[in-house]
Length: 303
Image (cartoon, helix red, strand yellow):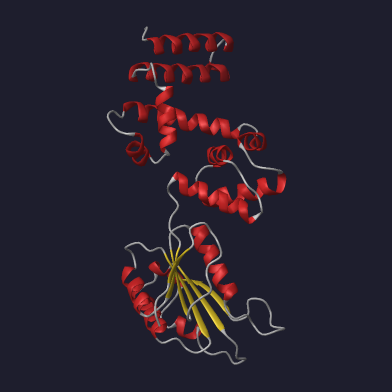
């Protein structure tokens, strides 16, 4: 049986299984979980009248003992297909790993084996053995780049028949962060609670300022990083810092007229004013006034 590889980066439904052994490879838990669900749904379903989940065994490789797989895949007294999901195969001990490889090479009739593997160096020999055994492989590549997260959000919203412009997608990442589960949940919320094209204003209104606050925090952390990098192009620096190149360009525009020492003094002034406004100072108004003066002087180079 030839190995067939496919990809499920955006969380779209996995292709129909090709053979009794399906190997799902990736570190993105959400995408792997969705791929498992899609594969199991595409497999032959229990006979009419059977209870949901009949014949489906869902286990973690780290919890399996030697020979336990043989019991799970043994023919049922009542007949019918059997589906065994083994999650985290890279964590299997030596005995279980060997058993998985042997089972994949000689699958019993009516048994389907769905295996997930992180794809890293740990448990690589098992990954190789499963591939040689002819497992149908589905890759769930990690989503790390900004553009990939934008594509993920577009796909998530499309699942609900919704669209967002680029400003809305960027605002959503600023408001929610980069965790895929959080982003998927946010898309579900926006799809249910808003109408029309989702833009930055819709996101800001829905999160009541969370996007702006988060965006400020990110800028506050990255001003220093971008400001101290000299002689690097936007693309190279963006890859190094893990941010989109357009954000590097925007931060560099904000840094015009600032020196490293002036920026440090301004940050210190803001931190001091924040503490005094929250109760550590005698006058919140005076604290803000002093902070503004220090910031202006810091940018002009005065002390």
